[in-house]
Image 1 (tube, rainbow, N blue to C red):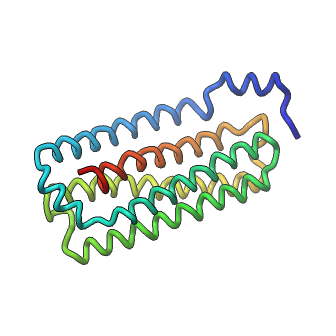
Image 2 (cartoon, rainbow, N blue to C red):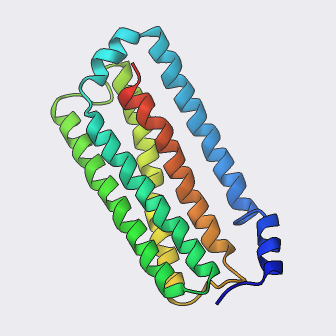
Length: 195
């Protein structure tokens, strides 16, 4: 089922999702921006400490974490497109695929946390690891919330709650998930790569 050119034009003129979600995302991005700036400024003051501490992290794990979140974000975006085309069944499968890909992130991140804790590189080890645990831990909590949202969206989509004319709730949830992706795309080079 295709949408009319008039409906497509109207959709392209409106902001996707709910305005309240946009305010929430902006507030969360502000908090992340403050944390990221604190990390970057502290790194400038202690470049050697940060370089030596960063060597304990595996950048290939960081890359795998990035790919899992970006893949999940792609599946979620495709789900929105399927709902716009009145294909709720396909959208449900894509949302479940997004949830599955995010599970890869969670497993990898928990393994990394366990490894670092086993090496004694906890929050109190040094300034780098204090900021590492705060930044990535705060982001990890957002991932968990996002997974709950993806699961809820998949359940509602399966029940036919969204259609071509009413899917702002789905868009809002997917917008939140894209925020989680975007923040990680900034954190990955900052925490794992930049010297």
